[in-house]
Length: 252
Image (cartoon, rainbow, N blue to C red; front, side, top):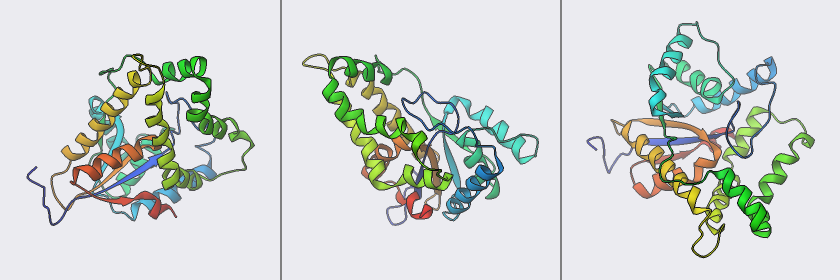
């Protein structure tokens, strides 16, 4: 920790995002028009706002073992030989990094099995079958939000990013995950069988963020699924290593 300076800490901003392409999330936005001119201009608007933070390093929700592949694609994009794929890593991340002349991006995620014995979908289905009232209290708001998405009037990409980073929404996602610990019964901690992995993964995200810092002048930008924002922010606050800025302030 040679970079650590108690009088000047590196800055960190976490940009919560929805997943533009396919994902393993229980619920996700269904956008079929990301590559249209209108949506592309909306993405540029988000990029321009986030660029005002002036990040010196860009961290992505990509497994560390894929760093060479992603940076190879980034180099191709810089050379003009790679089209941006339908994924926030490329559509938002590559745009920001290239326009601020970053030489590389940082992949900091981890997706191994770790300590888990169940997936989030397993816990979801178990609660739905065995604890329907608890299921509704934990997941009902999210199910209602996404099941009615088609009835909602048109929202811009900026609108969606504001929602992903609005403090109440950020906390609500985390509250849902914490309450998944209640799924199960005495000596049958069903929710914990996935949550232990969730906490493990987010602690690894935090530890890898700390690893990419080499100066108290660094300004790190992490682009990550919105469900991670609250828990990683808590680890950041509790570590005392960073001064945090809110993405929502740049999106308003």
